[in-house]
Length: 610
Ligand SMILES: [Zn+2]
Image 1 (tube, rainbow, N blue to C red):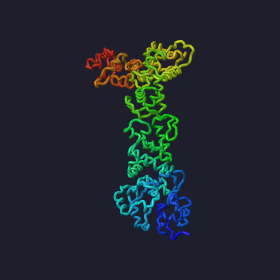
Image 2: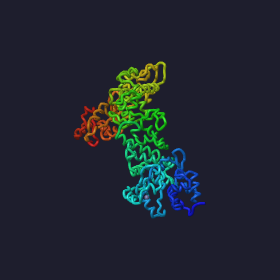
Image 3: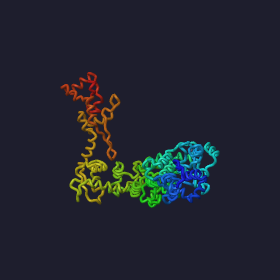
Image 4: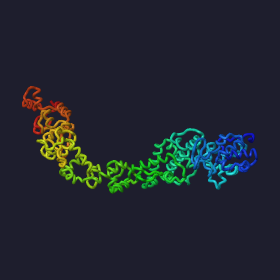
């Protein structure tokens, strides 16, 4: 037997609100008395226990699924379920009284026959405004247990006071986060990454990140107004809806902001509330996948000691170092280390003289650099290490065959001006590997230092020739000779060195022969200016390892010269007369050569003068 007429619940109406209406309509009793009469406990009504739902259905004629639409059921320890969603109990809380005063005033004249209707959505922690009225909800903590029942006749004030509350309520528009929460409860779909976790986890991630982004990582959340939290949630959702990439981007922004205020400290100092929430989890609500994303972010961006317990899991491997942590681990002075890190680009754009304590770099690369610095040799000791002399060692560093650990040629003292032993060893291996292994050097084959003296080619240039594979004959003898264990042919070295010059252009001798002049004339043409203030012949400057400068000449340049100028001999030949005769003829005509004949050792004329 059920009570007629059947009074079904309204959309979004709470069980308590619906029960109150049924009680008043059919029995004239208030809800608690009605429940006492029907022997259903208030707690079972609030929790929609299976037994209570069955009894209420029989009594009221309303179907069990319809009654279940009026509120959440328990789904385990600190968990509730509603319309297929499972979420932490704090998400739909009874510890707060919340309502829209304007909605309650509307009820007096609306379809509810003057009864106040309690809305389920008002109980959702992340619903903070009424989309119908565009104002923030009135929300306060319950003073006692009875408030949990959320009977709007009891917990909300008189209509007169409600009118006052409407007047002072802050205007607010629905945030994307609130829309997401209510849509999802109604069975709608949202951004994939958010939908793949519990609704409360997704919403909390949005709000926490938003709050830290808008108000700073160390803001006191309890001091924020509902409207401030509402607006911060929208900022957070913009990031969270993009999944881990969006979250990392907003974490980066949050970290950057806190670094300005607080340049040192670990992840707690950088991420503040987000870190505290995930590390200490005082609410005992499982935070969901945000935990892994933030954890990865911390390990990927901050210096975290292996073994550190981060959000309940020990960090297995260090991925980043700061100057401070690597200095501690390596024993190198932080200033030396910072300088090296900046100069080698591991701390790109950093200041070599100023340590940024929050900045981190790849741990493996940093450790490798620290190892190089610690296992390095001053240039003055390289001769012992390599079996060469000091000048040769310096020349190889100057020419980039060996590099200073500081990666900056201008560093002349201190650890960073050393060369890493690994670098020297690798060089020696490569150098020796270029030759054919022999027990005794073949006839005519000599070590590079001796070859340098004979061929008059700097040692570093010979090394470069060997490493570049430009010599056909290279032998490698006993390893104990180190630098002197590689043998070359002095004659081949000489021609190969000349070949290097030839790669860039014609030698002065070659250029002179094409121009019908003697070699010394070339130098004078390079250094003297024509009528346009340009050199008669442009040279290409070549510097060898010892710093000796030579010039060569592009074929094109020589050709251009011959098009503009002509020697007396060539001009005479062209006219089938002797040079002397032609010289007299030109002198009579007043045609002058471009330079004194003693300077060029020949008379050269501009073709247009003839
Ligand atoms: Zn409203």
